Length: 379
Ligand code: COA
Image (cartoon, rainbow, N blue to C red):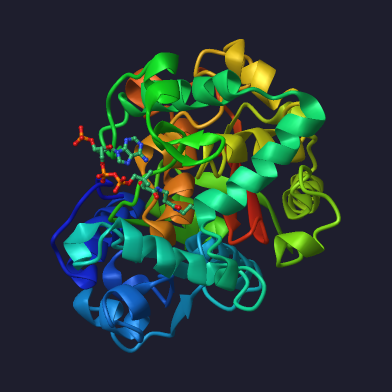
C-alpha cells in the first residue's frame, strides 16, 4: 500500500505505487496476471474518472485482460477482493490483481464541506440526503443509541481514538503517526455529537493492492503466502430508519457468522482484527457484532486496554481508519495488507506475537454493506 495522506498524483500513478510492489512481493510477472478486480468509489464525482479499471490496467502494462471495477462505498475494495477469491476458488482465474485507489483530500480541489456532501451520496437519496444527514451524523445516531442502551461514554470512545493513534505511530503508511490523549480527543471540536474531530477518521488519499492466487500456484511464487479461509458478505436495510436494530449492525453479525463457518472457527479463535472504525463508535459496534466482545462491552473493553496491540484481543493494530486513514476505495484491501503483514510476522513494533488467525471487517454506507474476511498464516 502507499502511504495514506495527501497525494498530488493521478489515480493511475497512485495505484501503480501500490500495485507494482504487490506484484513484486507476490513473485509473479505482470504477464501472468489473468484478471484485475479493482475498487474506486467516488472517482466519477471527485476526479471525473469513471472507466478506471482498463485505464489502470493499461498504465500497469496489463491491457487486454478482463478488468472489473467495483463500487460499494467504503467497502469497495473488499468486495473486489471477495469476488477475486471466489473467481479463483471457482477456477475461473488463477492469479488476480485486486486493489483500490481513492483521493479525498483537498488535493482533488474539493474541500471538507464538498467532500462531506460527496460522501453523503452513499446514504439514502430520498429519506436521508434531503435532511442534511452526513456520515459523521449517521454513525453519531447509531452511537447515541448505543450510549443510551449500554451506557457507553464519550471518554470510552476517546480511548479508542487514543489507542488507534498510538498504533498508527508504528505504521509507516499511516496518515497520522502521533500520540494523543483522552483530553486531546475530548477537547477537540464537536463534529456530530457525540463525535469530536479526533473521534473521526480523516479524508485521505491512497492506494492498496494484493495478489490472489490459487492455492496450488501460490506456493510456487511466494515463500510467505497467507490463506483466505472465510469470507462473509451481507447487507442491511437503507435508510437507518428501516433497520430492525440500531446497535447490532446486523450485516456485520451475519457476515461474520458466515465467515467463521466457512473458516470452521468461532470468534474466540481470532487473534486480532482490523475493523471499520470510521468513527470511534463504529469500532464499538463492530467489535460487538463480530462477537469479539459481548454486546455493550466494546467501550469498557477499549478503556481497560483489552483491545490494544498488547491486549487480549488487539483491534486495529494498523491504526485503523482513524489513524491510518480512509481513502475509501483503498481501505478494504489495505486491511488485507495489514492482515498479511501481521500473519507473516513482518509488522515490526506493532507486531502481534504468534498471530495465526485474523479478521478484517469493512463496511459501506449506512452500516449497510459489510464484508468480513478471515485469514490464517499458511501452514
Ligand atoms: N483525526 C485527527 N486529526 C485530524 C482529523 C482527524 N480525522 N482531520 C483533520 N485533522 C487535523 C489536521 O491534521 C489538522 O491539524 P493541524 O492543525 O495540526 O494541521 C487539523 O485537524 C484541522 O484539519 P482540517 O483538515 O482543517 O479539518 P477539517 O475540519 O476540514 O476536517 C473532519 C476534520 C473530522 C471534519 C473531517 O476529517 C471529516 O469529516 N472526517 C470524516 C470523514 C468521513 O466521513 N468519512 C467517511 C466515513 S464513513
